[in-house]
Image (tube, rainbow, N blue to C red; front, side, top):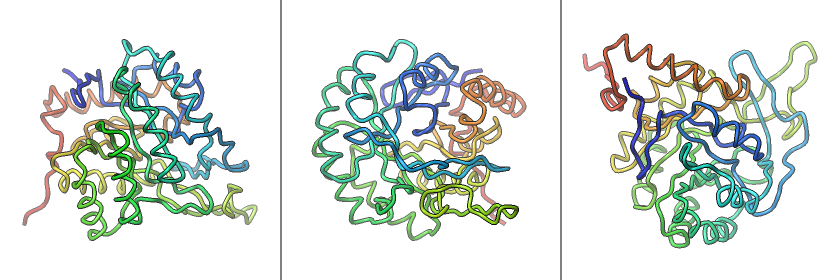
Length: 314
């Protein structure tokens, strides 16, 4: 049985990787992921300069997941560029680079610097269009005209294949509109669905209070709560963007969840909240559990069932 994935001119031992934002801020974090059983890893979504992020408490574990309003804390573009250039061991596994400039200009500036190194090192860019937890900043991917401007500017500056991290959509018309924009850009090779479900509110009944400080308690919901929404978005873009890959992200805590993501169309499977709570050892467990599901069903490769989700016709 093989969990191998061959995409983006790279070979991945298995489809698992961290979600951008989880266990990927420091060199120590990234080296733990590199040493883990994951098939790949991605760096923290970066801005041109270091950001402290939102005030604490900004992350709270919940019975079925988490709520967070991190505010893009990161060590700055130059730090992650240095990791890409001189620290990561590419013989161990491929590397993705997450970028989340707060303006078109910031993304263009970072892309221009990353371009040559990405070509040399084969690092893969994931452009984050879906930061729901930066006060005063809307999610780019919820404004289709803005999203088009961002993608055009990044395509012109980067001139290499890249992917996009998307927020969840909740309306069929929005799936259609977003897919129409993405399909217009040949350099967008993969679509990661989803970032956290933005602007949830968790109330502690005992204290009669919200549970995180930023944005008066509003934050992004993750974990088991969002699995059905994530699967819907994966399948919606898999069916609407046939020339692009889709990466699944959201609600993966066991092998069956990963199987569902791949069945819905995912080529890679990112793990966020469950990785945060369990640590990098989760990847070995997920690999074993996914193999168990496949064995039970008689599958020997991921290609045999990827995107083959059945619908009820009558």
